[in-house]
Image 1: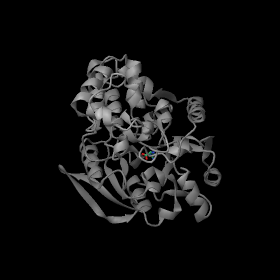
Image 2: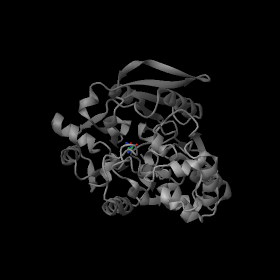
Image 3: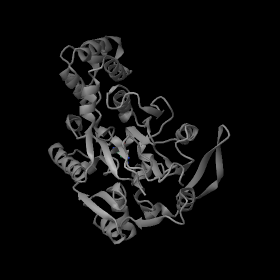
Length: 408
Ligand SMILES: NC(=[NH2+])NCCC[C@H](N)C(=O)O
């Protein structure tokens, strides 16, 4: 049973999606060059106009199913009307050891003079060396002309990673890769200063141990799985578990070790939920994936048992007999290709209703065989950042799956 939500909250991956935050790819993607794309975590140089068209198709698909789409860029520009938010975001951009005092001073007055819309653009797209007409100082003079005085944030596209809703709280995460770290200064400012969110409850902050939203899966009301690998550290899982369990937002947090590999950078690259009791999962890791439960006892965190196969630990915590599994691809080679192209990275917008990249034909066919309706979107250009519909979306409000509080 689901309950229509009237507050910003989410207690599952599949409750009817009501509001989502997306980021339409913008000028920050035009900063990608063959010199910097690896450092900026893109596999190629996307055709930006086409990426925008693909993203618009994604947003239209969501709106067509009654989902309210909020855009990060608009929220940010509105947030930057607030003095405190401006100060925080500007100082975060200036906390770059490459600058030195002279350049930092120049930048502070340059950014301080910009209107909210323009400031938002610079904070997202960065500032190229030759765009800073007033630039001076040794650091500025000796900087490579191809370099950015303020680095662009092309991975803002993946709104999943920089914040995540857990119950009626929001976790602003602590991103692991240098190229992404500044993103959370923007999401943090939005949640704290935008009138739509101000006063909301938070359960994690960017100053804490590394944690990325792509690793966090709300398996069921009260059960949160957290991957730990290339991005989220074990200490990050422990901290989130402590905060989430301590605040009574869940009864169990599952720590799920994943390979420290680009192909499996987040838990949502190997599995996502498509129904209350079903996941789409990459079979080449299925056999090895384990989980260990964390619970709250008295006033402390306890490890509940030994690591055991993920699907078993998850089903037990969720209070169901078994998790139904739809496998990526058809054979190991197809599976590897479709996993890489984010075939697993579906966004459920309701039970048995998921958005997926059209290119993953075999995985999508399997999902349909399993009774999941697949809403296909193009992703030829969007995919070059290595993220699918789930990575590109941050649910703000979903209908609750819990019939009653503590039902499971
Ligand atoms: N939740 C996800 N799987 N996000 C994908 C993020 C991709 C991005 N280029 C990165 O490396 O960080």
